[in-house]
Amino acid sequence: MKSLSSTQVLVLCATFITSVALGQGAEDRRSVVEAQSSRLSQLLRDGTQKPAVVGASVASSDVGLQQLVEERETGIAVETGVTTSYMYRSNPLSTNGELATHIKSPVVDATGFVALSLGAHDFLGGVFIPRIALSYYALEHAKTELRLADFTSTRVSLLGDLKYPNGWSVSPSIEYSNIIGSLWDTEDYREYYPNLAISKVWSLDNKSALRAVFNTGYHLSRVEELGAAIGVPIPGGTSDRLDNWTNSLGLAYSRYLFTGLQFVGFGEIASKRYSNGSNQNRSDWTRSIGSSLTYALIERKWISWRISIFGNYISRDSSNVDYKYSNLDLGASTGVSLSF
Image (spheres, helix red, strand yellow):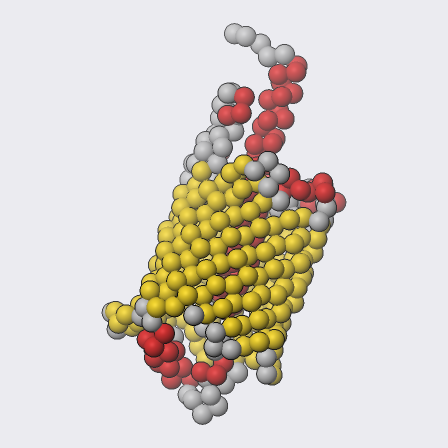
């Protein structure tokens, strides 16, 4: 058996550490950025916009019906927009130990999206609205030493919303997304994600609403095999080691304080169960809580321009203690959307 020289051992160790950082780090960045910035912001928005729908003389039970009538009249529509935010992130690498304690960095991110609604159709006693959506996300760290963690992500979604007059919604979807490391322009992560969301909206009064969402789905992922760069396979370092089944339950409270200003508070718990390779039988539990204040600078039927301040805290426990971490985001954002 041929022995490895000390130089080869060092190269092997460096490659292993780099591969873990890129593979698992990409998944962790996706967990924080995608789950917080996309899933939770969607949780905050859905069912709490269009305050004019809820007039002072309208009973809560009428809100869902009026929204369905509005959806039927909308038909085919296009929505597009951009959002950017600047935030302080307490744990930008989503890790624990010394790195979590000493490396902190401001973060700038931006999202552009376009979505096509393909009409509203009577289906199973509700109104079904199929959609096609495309989004592009970019994140950059202010500190030079963290530029290795900068990335962009593209997402393509085929989804539908089946809405009922009583506030219930069922939303099946399938999504494709990837992560491109900005420093080396390499694809660190990609996945297909079939999932199902079930939600319920309660109108509490003419200014506030409560929304609960349950989401379940399976992440079919691909990353580079550990050790592939030097042709020396590492046990458990399979390309599907980040496959996992995810379940989450979220609750959001929204209240219009006065004209143009909206407060939102939210919380979410999520579980992940990994299936393959070195992560087989690994289980993670994540808890998120946060709030935001949003002011509508412009709010018209076809254009919306909003500014926000927000805070999000996320904490993850894992059956593998190496993957435990917590993170706090504090920041401000602005976004413009257009509807046709």
